[in-house]
Length: 354
Image 1 (cartoon, rainbow, N blue to C red):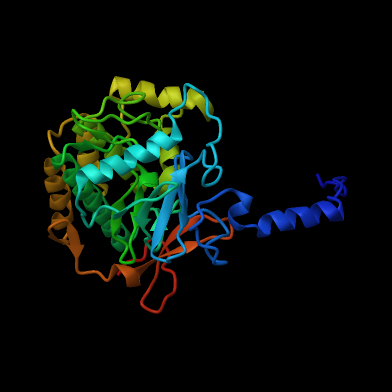
Image 2 (cartoon, one colour):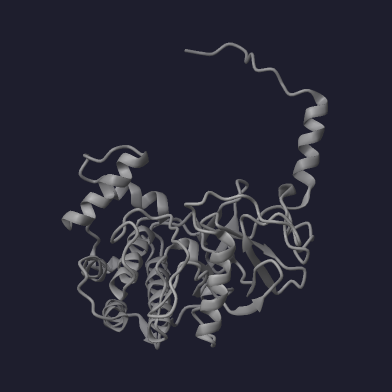
């Protein structure tokens, strides 16, 4: 049946003016570090955030970003009040700085740490940067190969951290950024543990399908998180993965009931199934704690890539000009979307290959 004319009263003109003025203020009027970029293309929205515990803005130098606590109210100002039972956001950012400084060296699969600032930490600025939230399902052979590549890059980052006695504790799309060649780099370290030396002030994570709440830090827990991320990746990102989780039809629709449902499945060892070409064997073994090290998982991923005719050198899948074949666009709603394109810049329909 049709609906009659809307009876919603439009906002008064003076209110619309106030809203427009608020929209025009840098970063929606929120306090940001004094060195934050005020370029029109930068100041419209955050570069990204880390679980809403720290925000990230471009720096005015154009080559770096500043990560600062969500409780920040201005340089020289007292931080915003926080609940006593919540992790202190200032401490979380300071802990990340301490982990980076303990690490003491760069790696191509980590976003480079550039030091502390009066309000937080400085990191290298990547383009396109934060991981896309809109991803195609890997029906194209080239998209599938890109996802294999990202899986290897992520394992390479975890291996580097583990060999330096650091456990990440929060691997997911929030802690992954992309470089201009579409290679993946891990970032954040707010929740990282330096084994035997320093524990994080608290842990935050956007994923409920995990090895505990929160999991005990371990190599296997990091690999479990990696496997969950790969599973979501192979099913079209965060949203697509949720649908697969409901494949039996007995899952609650949403909310805390669904979170409990996922955790109960982990406890029972009931995991979704992926095809071998989508790294299902590796994901399943990681979920079942079958790997003693990241190196073992890397060998298995490489075997899948090479078994399908791909070439791997170190942790890199070679033979594709990734920056030409893929692009990341920002939608009108502010989401980042991965697109596969042809040699002329046009989008490739799902199912087409190269």
